[in-house]
Amino acid sequence: MTLQKKIIKLTNVKPNIIPKIEIENRIINLKKYLLQNIHLKSLIVAISGGQDSTLTGKLCQIAIEQLRKERKNKLYKFIALRLPYGTQKDEEDCKKVINFINPDQTFTINIKKAVLSSELSLNIAGIKISDYVKGNEKARERMKVQYSIAAMQNGIVVGTGNAAEIITGFFTKHGDHGVDVNLISQLNKKQVQLLLKELNCPKCLYLKTPTADLEDNNPQQPDEISLGVKYNTIDAYLEGKKINILEKNTIEKLYFNTQHKRTIFNIG
Image (cartoon, rainbow, N blue to C red):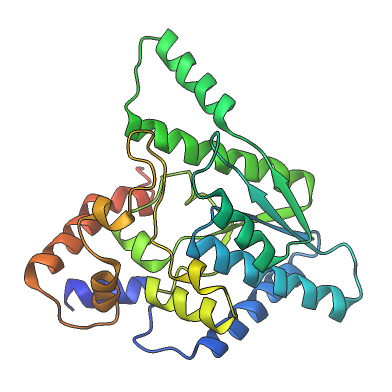
């Protein structure tokens, strides 16, 4: 088995999808998960303003609305979290996303003071962190906030990582990858856009340039610049297509270099 086939098997990305069916299956399975864990009554998603959290949030809201109606239980709810670091540059997009999802409840918690406090504590100990590492601090602070709210709301944290991000390691270890369930881990970036389009998401949101926006020195830097390869190339790779050898090597190098982020090695 080639490495490409191994990675495709790992992610379970389909070469072709029918968006409507993919949406329905995810909603059905999410409802089943909640019904199997009867003490859980809420879903929590951090809404960044990007495509992935927009799709995840919308799927969660639909699932919760259906559960409330089917089970006649008003306790089920979807909670959208806005977790900016100071003032977010694409705040207007975030407002559009919240309007599109129409969550049952929205909390806004600014994480800046918490991150700066953590940075100061490290400085006092003689450790000066880089801008990149500080970006990971932001992601982990957001994870912490999500779990605090989930614990108080009988809920779970729903992840927003797509297959292209997962195989390239383009996430923060124990940060945005620290979740309970993930609805879109078997979708590549193009497929995320297709599902959003099917859900009548505003075009300006599902065609928005993806950015992690974690570094102070490189605000709103496109993911593709950080990765060194375009998403449509990663998508083609995950669909089993033949791509340029240099781009193939870049993707596979990213995969190998980030193996530690996807697995825990238990030493006995």
